[in-house]
Image (cartoon, rainbow, N blue to C red):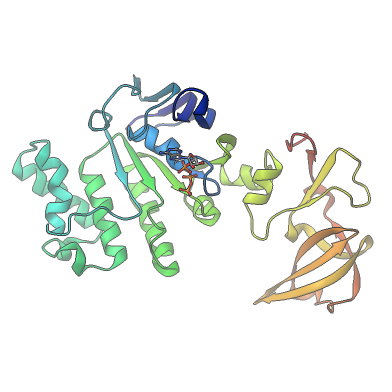
Length: 335
Ligand SMILES: Nc1ncnc2c1ncn2[C@@H]1O[C@H](COP(=O)(O)OP(=O)(O)OP(=O)(O)O)[C@@H](O)[C@H]1O
């Protein structure tokens, strides 16, 4: 196991004046044994960051270190990492056992040791009875577990996961998420996990890196990212429905943005006047969509608050201890 350091990492695709810089100086220290999720919308650079750790992309400037070793110039095979991909990348003609054993065979690990390591991984992943089958004879979730098994047997310093759950249906995704958590508890291997899914990020991560167009906007625990978003981008990316960001509401001065999560609004006679445009019933909760002046506002209400009629005018107030203030120019949180 090892810590993982990003030191002012930059990535450009292409050379010369046509070069396209996509990672703009990322610095972060992932602790030994930590599970860190990199999250952000499509194109923000999360896969590029992961692929630079893996050695599948060159690092244009800066350093990546695994433990005490700077890995910039090391081949992927020398980096002591194992990667789990979205599309499993299993060999279809090999049994699941051979798929899991393949990397060890190449590395000339003795046969008995291969058997022992594969059996141990299969036990952790509950794959024991499926080892003699081929990948096509498994479900998507089972295939993903074989892919994880192949990574585990290598006993790497660092696990890299590139959207490994995105091909699974919702139920299997939730189940595999639990398995990955269990795996991390048992093995304690430093892990970097890329996803565009904020729920996955919030539930899996010990800490989250939120990427915004090649810049790391925040690196913090799920609680920090949710309760103290560093920028308006983080505030609107994490949380569903997103945080309300108001520029023109009464009480907001020019140059400021006021952030309020939908669950921190209440119907209260002292609040803003809001025209209700839509009400969505979500089981025990309802979402009330409305307008305060020319801005949209969303409130999450429980049953006790009743449901206003569409077209009605209500008053909404924010919990004063749950206000977030941002600078309108930079989008950064103002303390
Ligand atoms: N080989 C390449 N050549 C040129 N540009 C690239 C290359 N690979 C990625 N990019 C660009 O780099 C940026 C970051 O891409 P990257 O794949 O890291 O994003 P991502 O956050 O992982 O997105 P997604 O969730 O869609 O996979 C994008 O603008 C992309 O177009």
